[in-house]
Length: 223
Image (cartoon, rainbow, N blue to C red; front, side):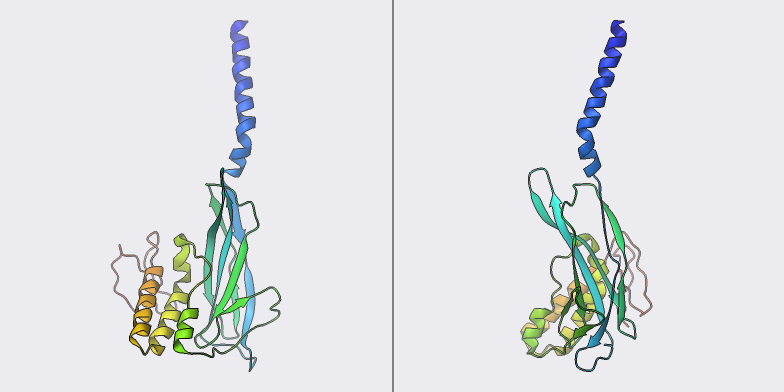
């Protein structure tokens, strides 16, 4: 009889422990997701689609920990616009085993095209996102060619095309020593962004090695 009571007591303790820990177990692995995001981009003056443009998105949220809440970069994605100016950032999903995101994820969508203002897409930009030609000095342009806000370290390679295009524009327009140095730094960042050590080196449809894995030791190639 005593043994039976001991077994029942242990079973009750286990049940209570599971009840107490279950809230943490439920929130220990959060599912995060966003997108898809689509739109169409046109020149603000002519209303025509813009060639050689990209759309990129960055998602961030509030990461709830036991003692504090941290702002956290969650996801990044980029895509070229098609001939008609359309873009589609695909839907994504990931698991976070550290803590739950207690607030709604915030998405930041931008349009970049050489020679145009870096334009942020808002829900009110329907049906077309209108971008204006950039007017200003080379130095002012260089100050604007930075990806903001935060970029997830583990997904920088998804923005490699944006970094590369920005570096291309900076190299074409650089005149002073400072500008050339800034363009060189942008090029180094573009090369670094293409590297995802978990994926092999491969060539995309445009002829670029979009992920240069150092372990593959492929030579640098350009279009």
